[in-house]
Amino acid sequence: MVKVFYTTLIFFIFISCDTPGRLIIKNNLKNPIHYKSELVIDQGSAKTKVHLDTISTSDERIILFGFGFKWNSDYCQRYYTDRCKYLEFSTLEDTVRFDSPEEILTLFEQNKRGLRNKTVKIKLKKLFEE
Image (cartoon, rainbow, N blue to C red; front, top):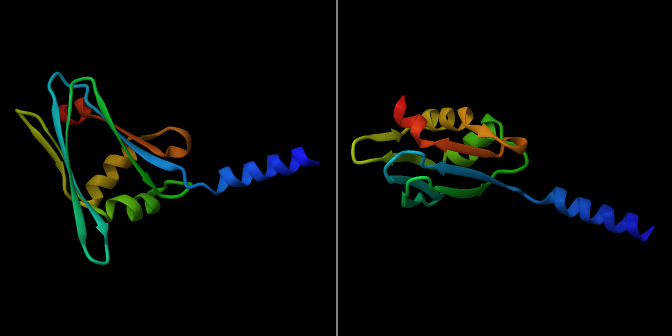
């Protein structure tokens, strides 16, 4: 009886956790890439945070964020695209920028994968070839 109790307790602890979603940015280009985004931290006061990063060749960055147990278009819209003003990737030769929530949502929807679709993996070579 004690085993059943502990098993049930552990099950409910894990099921109640808000597992994080992951945005993986994979640089599969021959040159380093610069990544820039501006995220709204507090929508009430419109505070924003600009994120700048350089991703070396064959490297990746993982950004974690929580949005509940499922990630459909509504959740994605509410938790990320409503808070993200833009995403920008640039090399010495070219820049790819996503300005609107619709562009960001489309980018995420096309690149979702993994268990429960909670991972977005953006391969930069694909973006710069389009």
